[in-house]
Length: 152
Image (cartoon, rainbow, N blue to C red):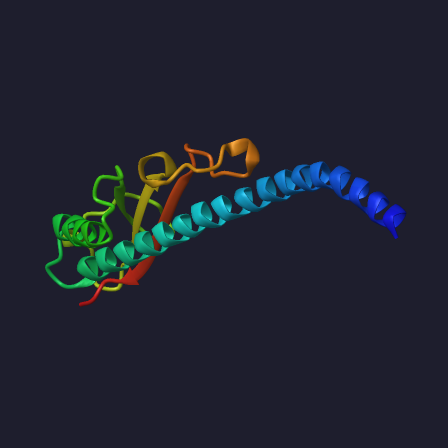
């Protein structure tokens, strides 16, 4: 019995160091996954808010008498509500399909109006993972666009 205890005792001491190294590797992978989930989850939230802002801008653009300033203001209200007003976002209003800049106050009824809102990840994102480990590139542009038909 004493021999068996002594042998198990030696094996346990050796196993302790190996368990610590295995824990180190496992925790590194789990932490990278956790941070990646947080970073990409935030990116999806930003994308959703950009889409909501573009939709509100398009709704402001399609009504008779709508102006580009009203489009910009509607987008600004949504971005402020999402706490993204300091993200350096840009609003682009074009005629859908052609990509030409459009003055919505002069657009004829039936014109397809596209409102795009975009910003760079550097201006809005959390950078918990380096790009080499799967993090989002700070220069990546997040954008959302909505197309609606002008009323009237």
